[in-house]
Length: 179
Image (cartoon, rainbow, N blue to C red):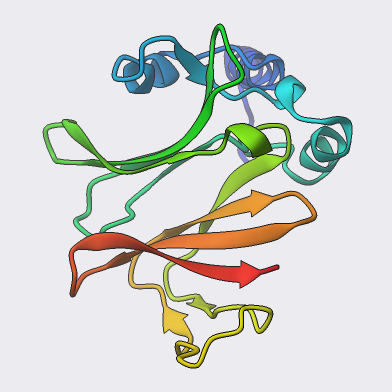
């Protein structure tokens, strides 16, 4: 097992405390430059049940940020939950980034009514996702095998939606996986 030097342990502890308190890192600031008046939704801004669940189940994962390749172009992209600094407004945003680190908005949704209970996490490449049976539709789509990382937006205790890249249509699509 590799030994960690004291500075590595300090940095890891600092990042964990920063994340838990909802403070922004330099990376967060790079994302936020395109969204003036917003900050990354912090754990303490969730309702009590969602906050307890997040702290118990995601000790090493920021439930408001996912940094992965969503569109299969080998460049890391961003999914982020944002909260307005001076109002209740909240957004879920997906940014697709190029090799030059230039990012463009691929999806933006108003999540204001759900800001206290949402979290996001990555869905691994190769995983199969399928629409929940709770949705009554004649054309229930077949399960989809992810060709790149997806993003799961969970509405704590209510629903889950996976956002995935459709290479045929060159856009982000959704599949509601739980109700």
